[in-house]
Amino acid sequence: MSLHMAVEVVRDSEVSLTAQIQRFIKGEIAAGSLHAGTRLPSSRRLADDLDVSRSVVVEAYGQLVAEGYLEAVQGAGTRVVGHLAGQPVVPALLREDRVPGARWDLRPGGGNLPDFPRREWLSCYERALRSAAPSAHAYPPLAGAPGLRLELAQYLGRARGVRATAEGLAVVGGFSQALGLLCGVLRRDGVDAIGVEDPGHPGQRQFLLERGVRPVPLPVDEAGLDVTALAATGLRAVLVTPAHQFPTGVTLSPDRREHLVRWARDVGGLIVEDDYDGGLWYEPGPRPLALQRLAPDHVVYAGTASKLLAPGLRLGWLAAPPGLLDRLLRERARHDLGTESLTQLAFAELLRGGLFDRHLRRLNARARTRRHALEEAVRRHLPDAEVLGRAAGLHAYVRLPRHTDETALVAGALLRSVVVRGGAAFHARPRGGAPALVVGHAHLPRSGISEAVRVLARVRSR
Image (cartoon, rainbow, N blue to C red):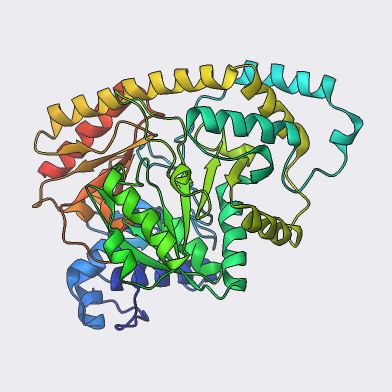
């Protein structure tokens, strides 16, 4: 059947053709133009109609299948899934919705949540309630509860090497709010673009665009962000994940760290350090200290409880130079009246009593066993693949042999109830490197990791 579909693409856009096709189809589904059950043209037919390489369409279809927008049924073509009701499947920054019926979800988001310390949290919350002054029930300070800021300053200095006083910290509603506030301040300064790592988080790129700041992709290699490429752009701001790059897992090398700081000083630039997975570090040896300590006047350090406790708490923090922090708080005053007080006080109790450190030790022990299970499963079932990056965080980067059809593997795995994201989904520009999978492993049972990798091996061998 020779079907036709109207798709708009712009050939001279900075956005890749694959990303444009994905975005267009998502938008048509959200707007109700593409209805549930609608059959789409074959990848070959659509590629011919658009005069693009078939691989462009295959990759776009494959990622939309992995994200739950489309379903590929052998013999029945590719269709819009039946459970969508005009809403995007991935509507928010740093969030992955569940794919109905999937047995194993290997995405770095979605069900990839830490074990919440319920008893400890309840105990801390009760203590906070009992000891809270009447002022704790009033509107909270915009910068956050003083008690939590003090505990955070001590904890971040001890555990991350962050150089900040309590007065130099602000408590925010997760990293997304911190980034949104920064976008507002940057726009007021006439800065309309920011460097981002490529590969990096696609949700962050979209988040920046929606807030009027253009993300400029910068290459990442085995030493982290290419600072020479950054310097050649003329940019004045950059967003980095130096300790554990997302998604490749590499650490910014000492030489690159020094180069990045020199760049910031030379151009009066701003570095946004996203320490997204905090204390999740289970590789032998110490975790790299915060980049912020090298240039506190040029770095905004941002952390979050989302990967360490629960994203539902909407609890994050940032350390910023004094003048910038004041402007961020004025920007915040335009949008909300602060972060909920009792949650802040409970978290302060968790930090003060050492319970947070104990919780992190448990998380690291669990994540370490899951990482070992993933490495063993890859050695056994995908012996020509390799688990890369530092043993840290909740995910790992699995490089596949160059001959692997990444898109077909992702789509085929979904048909067998395994949801995984290919490396291509994290690239802003077409890449020439080896195919890869970005695997969220820390939330799965060890037997589940082995079973999921075994399914991937069977799909690849077909």
